[in-house]
Image 1 (cartoon, rainbow, N blue to C red):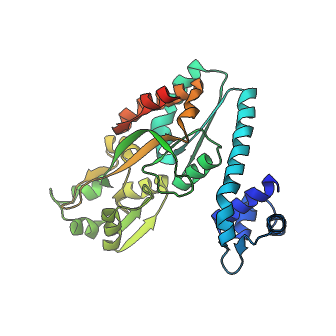
Image 2 (cartoon, rainbow, N blue to C red):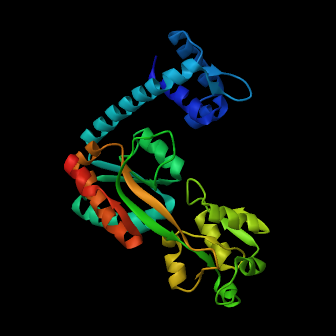
Image 3 (cartoon, helix red, strand yellow):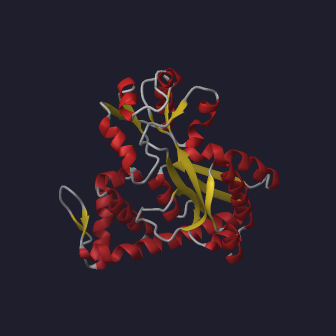
Length: 309
């Protein structure tokens, strides 16, 4: 049994496909199949039910947590060796929060630690959870509470609540009455922009998409441009559009019965022990300072977790 076999097993479980797992691991499908056959022969069990879809057998389900524990331990050992060679801090954040939370924090941090390597990864919820699971990062900023079953033991350091207002272009806003019904808004902008701000979409956002003639699912950049051109409306996280609203490029509206939504995000670690590293603890403190400028702090356990470390 080797780590390549276990990593291939874990990736197939997550992708539910030998083909996609092989592509992610940059190996051939034949190599992936060979590794799993060798692992099954060693264990004396069948791990997967092969067919149009790939699912775990009962034996595979039993073996999965042990395989992931071994992978995690190996990752921890590798990270410890890497950190021993050179100072390094690695974190991951939702894309929308990298600029408002990390930029100024990083500048202050690097003034104090000019020779430390800093890695900031960005992505969606599932990608950040995967990086925490594989211990490629020490701290993550993601939606809270975490609903991804891949990692269930995340410890929140600070939870921030951010407004998610409904916005349109100034031209559209100028044509609306002072207290418009949502039907009036949709008559002018029939296209709703869907953005994956949440793990589970709020009913109000889903209802808006159902009421519209058409909807489009876009990343933040193109979505903002579409809204500014008057070609769509959508619920945007406040930090993503603050400059546009301040400059008058977008206008927040509050149709009757459609109050602004909010999104909760958290800085998390796998355990308080991660904060024993002074460098990481200092970087976390700097980011926490920026959180108060972006949203409302609804839970703050940072001092408690630092004390535990």
